[in-house]
Image (cartoon, rainbow, N blue to C red; front, side, top):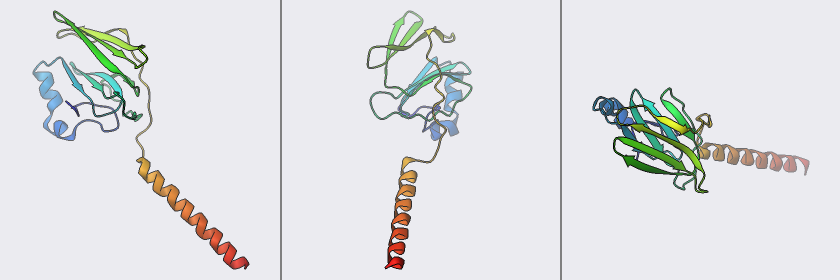
Length: 158
């Protein structure tokens, strides 16, 4: 899915999927793994047996917002790609940075939990805050007030 049912990133869970309970439906249907993007970062998690990966670090500017949840097992605001190898009932996943360095190497047997030989840490990220354009407007307003104050001082002095 582009925007998936589970994400701790800036955009978060897809609202329509959340309202329909898609994560729970997938879990009950014994789906092993869901991939999504949309949030520009990397996250791996497990929602009551439904494993998920948010892989949105393909090259666009990264999002550092982390709305951490109990299901989150890894979170990194990094550019990356994911390589999957399937052998029988085992899925192996390697998360690689553009430099070639391995960020994380995990996998699982069908129906089993994540097993990692090299797990990525959870980056606390940033608290969700106001969007960039809010601060741009605040800055523009402060510049405008400064110019008005300077004009008044000059006018009063002359």
